[in-house]
Image (cartoon, rainbow, N blue to C red; front, side):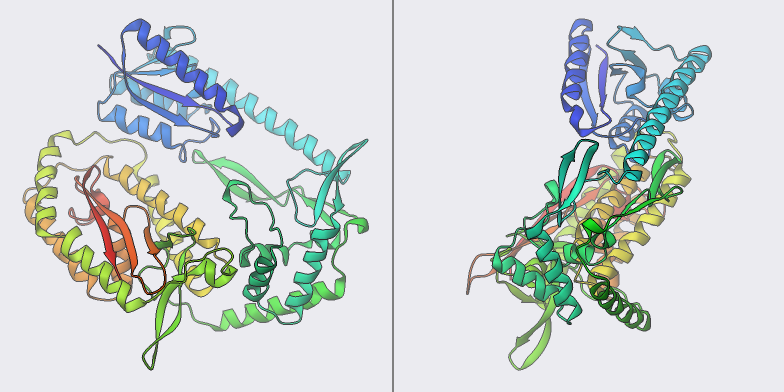
Amino acid sequence: MSRAAIYLRVSTDEQRESLDAQERGARQWCERTGASVVAVYRDEGVSGAEWAARAGVQQLRADATAGRCDVVVVRDLDRLGRDAIRLPEFLSHLRDHDVRVVEWSTGQTVELDGMALVVAQLRAGLAQIEREQIAHRVRTALRGKAERGLVVGGEVYGYRRVRSPDGVRYEIDAEQAAIVREVYRRHAEGEGLRVIVRDLNARGVPSPRAGARGTGSWSPGALHEILHRDRYLGVLRWGVTGSRYRGGTRVATAGRDVVEVRDESLRVIDDETWRAVRALDDAARAAADRTPLRRARHLLVGYAVCDACGGPVATARTREGRESVPAYLCAWRRDRGPEVCTARWTRSVARLDALVLDWIGREVLSPEVVADVAAEARRLAAEVPQPTGDLEALRAEERALAATVARLTLALETAPDVPELAARLRSQSDRLRAVRRELATSARPQTPPGLDVAIVEGAARLRDLLTRDTAAAREVLALVLDGRLRVRWEGPRRPVWITGAAELRAESSTQGTPASPEGFGRSLRRVTLHRAA
């Protein structure tokens, strides 16, 4: 019985019904042919031109390399991709690992000999041309609408969209525009964003809509965006940013053909108030330029969230006896007010840091866990896969992501008025972990002699790093932590609980110390944290 891997892809989130239909058709083909479904890979809302950020196709590639499937079942070949270069290369990779590709819509096996690959390249090239022509037509249509002052974007706070004979236009929303003017006036008079945010939330003023990402409350980040949007001067601008595919992934580019339309009927803010706010920006920027950059000072910033609201953990000062000490607390309660988060917890940095570091040293990197990792690594030595993908590109992405995570962590420490940075930090950290896992399952030398000793010594070095300084401890935490730590408040005079999990993986690293947990490619031990502080 052949082992079938089903691959599904749609280009937009609105096509989820098509995704389900693809899976039904693939499973019916497997039932008819007696194939056993061992995996289903889904890429929702991803273009066929995207390769680097398509998690489903990357996992399919890794599993095919490891010999976990015999056939890939797709509706048609362009589900796998629409790139005249990368699709044939991917098909060649599957062929080299004895994996067939079947289009269930026709029941035909995609031949993977030389001529078939040429045909596949032609099909992918035609699909790529079609995609580019569609994008060009859409962009041309949007440009025409922008030149006529019509709506070419989404919702903008302070305006509503109204339909006119020639299309949809913006119109000032009186209630929302009044809030915009209030925010500008109060900030120009010297009020901080947190003060304004807490007042708006306390008054129950509806916040801008943010779709699934929204919390239903005002944030300093939302005010920051409003205070920097020249739309409120009656300026409609389109095409400021663009994008292109480079290296198999979409990258942002500067706009080359910007359309700007001025409409005084859409003006909300007068020039004098706008200039006053910009002057404050200039002063803040000058002060920031004079402030030297510093590394993140606290262990849990960026790695822990408040369990009550999901907001990031931040730091402030609190008193222990007569002494003022740094303490962790919920950033959303601090910045947005008690209407957003009711958890009134505050715990000293030293207290929570000591608890987490003790957990890592005693339980996550315990001799028993490390011995299990070493034993599993020996067992997996025979399963080392052959080279896959562009390792240099992956390593370059890993370095870039690591730098981005470091910058975002610093920004979260130094610019607490923008808590939305936490979401960006979580996304980039998760991608960094995924890249490191992919590196761990890519080409590597055979397991070196003395692996047990290397793993034990590597774990000892990690334990030593925990005691050196906060920066070193944060590196260890980033390596072992699975997801985010959560801080739960159970009420006044009750303990605060911190929960989470660490994960050690069971393959040697593609780079650096074999015992580095970032290289454990297969999950071996998951150690949970549940302690009161």
